[in-house]
Image (cartoon, rainbow, N blue to C red; front, side, top):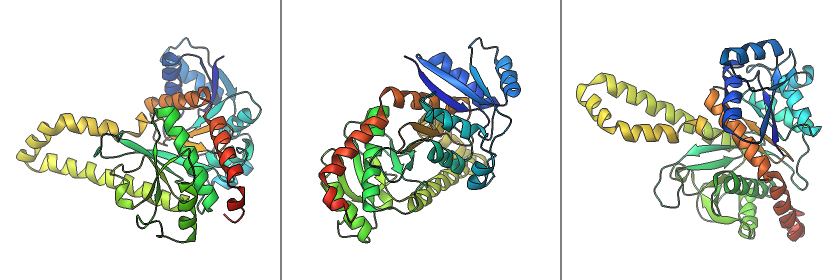
Length: 349
């Protein structure tokens, strides 16, 4: 049986052109997948004609969508027929197995929250994102996952523990990690560091036998790849994510400056070009397939707003693979076992 993915064709800085081309790329390279394009039917068909594709995509027409700069809460309420709202409803109706959008992040999260049931036993969903890391150890794969990065700003210990379960299964099933190392972001490595929420979370994670919890990690450990999954509240996670993006921009601009400033620097950069190409590939968001919104019974993938066709294709691939691997059910089963075992401790967590 093929997997069906609803694609918000109108979401993103380069929609619908790059989004439609991404759908074509995914359909050409992935087996057992059906992609439903949601958006302005005429515009979508025009893009399909440009590509001369013979793939018979199903198109769900709507002349309403949510722009990147709109207020998410207001737009979701005032535009029930928007493409991302239709996509989320299709998941709830059982017509598709997951959704992908490169559009407004807040609107994507709210649409999913409005229409897709949350996994039993989970109180808060999490937006997770893959980030590049230095490979200081053989066990390091060159990237990790941090969650939450903005869906839930403040969390209880119970919710943070659930984030750890979500991240564990996502890296294990989608990227093939063997027992991902789970780290709790804190101001120090000692288990007594941080406020009561972090100290309580630490103790609960220690008891999670299904998880490979390595303890607290500090901000400096994130780019080093000390942990494969970094667990944190959404407010702090978003700050960390934006900081990493800012550092990447600074490094990029510094390289441009060095290339144009002196001939000797230009020659040195030329010698380093093979390594720079590998580094660029590791830091290319289009390689990782977008940010999953974890905690729902079906997966929603938020692709980068600047996504090109390659990024959209990889986001579709991740959504389809998540469905095939039944990740959401595995998260529900593992969280359910842990909740049952620690019900009394969770009473005040």
